[in-house]
View 1 (tube, rainbow, N blue to C red):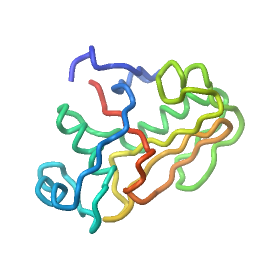
View 2: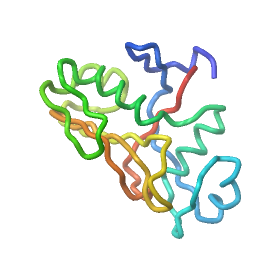
View 3: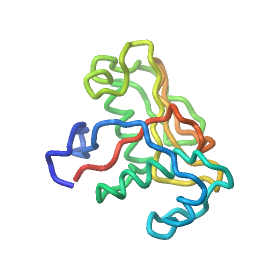
View 4: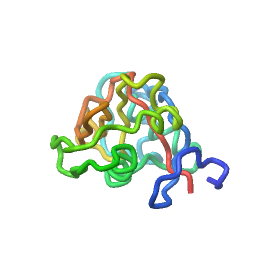
Amino acid sequence: LGGSNCAIELSDGTCFTAPFKPTPLTHAECIERQSELGITDCRDGDDDYWAGAVKACKDMGSSLPSQEQLDQLARDLYPGATISSTLYENSTGGSRDNDLAMEWNFISSPSSTFWLWSSEEYSKDDAYYRNFFSTRTERHDQVRFYSYFQAVCLAE
């Protein structure tokens, strides 16, 4: 990826593409590209949105961000908050900078919530993500068939 794909530049210099809603992979598509995409296990069912996000980034010559890179995004979006890297532990203090979240096209209104997939699998059915509520954020794991999750790819 080139610098022109950097739609979101974090304070540590990490760049992401613009957020997008991934197109899911079917079970057969996941199995077919599993090794190439670096996916450990494919869901038994169709509508694997996490695998679709992995594929979209791979097709751009990139990858989904790590949990640590999503932690940095959270630090930039929640000024003054303490951002936890511990699974299921909410941030403390500070609220989301809604203007910045809208500028980066994650939300369309200050009350919106968004979720971003990370590059890391939890199991064949779940993957890790970070949620971004208006007053808190946390790392979590979730089933891979959720269609409302967004993704960004690394843009280096």
